[in-house]
Every structure is written in C-alpha cells, then in structure tokens.
Image (cartoon, rainbow, N blue to C red; front, side):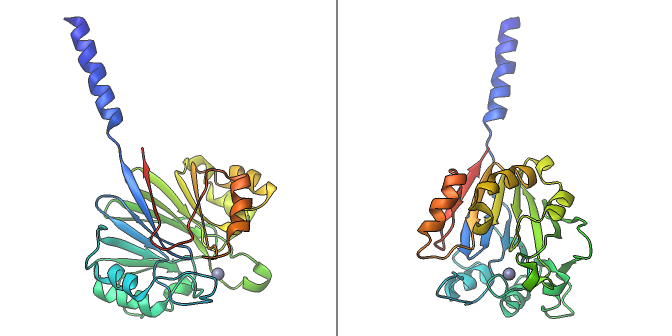
Length: 264
Ligand SMILES: [Zn+2]
C-alpha cells in the first residue's frame, strides 16, 4: 500500500513538471516584436513607418491595421505598446496615437522624450525617466514590465537620445529588449540582468558580431536565447555568419511574420 502512495505521489510530481508554459514572439519589422502568451500580448516597437526602406523593414499598412483593430488576428489583446526611443525606425507617433485611440485599455510605455511626442491629455501614457539608471516597473493584467535607461549607441552623435531597455515578465518567461544600445558597462552593471536568469534577449545585431561580444554577453546579460534584430532584410548573410560564429544558437529575425515559440 505504501508503495502505491509513493507511486501516486511521483506520478503527480511528473504531471506537474510536464505542464508546459509557452510564449510566441512574432517579428513585426526592424526591432519590432509582438510577444504573446495565451491571454496577453505586448508590442515592442511594432508601430513605425517607412524609414530607409532600402535597409530596414517596417510593418505594412495591413499589419498596422491588424495590430490596431485586431480584426482577423489570432493573438490575444495587446496590453501595452512600448518603444525604446523615438527614432523613426522604432517609433511613429501618429500610429501610436491611432492605436491608443482604438484601444482605451492599453498603454504606451516609452522614454519621457518619446511620450512627449504622443498627444498630451491621454491617460494611457507611462513615461520613463532616463535621469538615472533606476528601474521603473508596472504590472498590467499579470504582465510585469520593467523599464530602465540604456544609453543609445554612438553617444558622440546620439547623446541626446533617451533609449530605454524593457524587461517583460510574462507567463513565467523573462524577456529583455534593449533597443539601439551597445555594451555600456555602467548601464548594464546598474541593470543587474545576469542575476535574473533571462529566458530571451532581443538585441541589435551589432552587439553580437565580435569575439569580445561573447564575454560582454556573459558579463552583462546572460540569457538562454538570443534574437538578433535591426538587420537589413536583404544582403545580411555576412552579418549572419559573424553572429552565428559567436552565438550559434541565435535566431535572426529578418523577414516580417517570422515567429518563434519558447516552451518550458
Ligand atoms: Zn536609434
């Protein structure tokens, strides 16, 4: 009899261990992704328009319409829209205004500089201060989003640009999106990301192409999985070769509508 109880106990443990959770990450364009579990979606940089169209992808009118209205879509409602900074290959104020008008229960999260471009008077705006590297968190419908300053790449030219990183905690997964940054040691030290055991880091390709990228990644981020973005949608093979040399398990997003599903 005792062995039967032990058997049943072991069976229950194995059943609970095999109950999987999953998330899907769909590519929208440039650094834009739609992250979904069964109940919520968050859209990071999915609302931007044509900018250097010969190089960078952007969502078609049809995709924008689907993101705004959800008509004909399969993804759960978008709880939050975010943008790391207000450069036009990441952000379009008119599209974000349209989205917020059509989705009164959704919010926009961005730097104070990005939020200042959106219609004042909306109560759906969550501005992120970049005065310090301090983390700023909100809980939205069971999704925790933590935002923090991460300097823009090429500070000599872009020092005035307020770039922010986002940590999204959804359905047991921890996902990092860092926008147009680089290996700024002070910013990553303040963010303390390696202690978080991240599941996924969504990164610009230029941070992944050198021998020292591996050491920087281990020291500053250390996620289980990498998605490389901001790649050109054609003639990206040389970059792909370098990235896969140093990060053989990385996924490159180059063509809109690609997606990956993570399970655990
Ligand atoms: Zn930029």
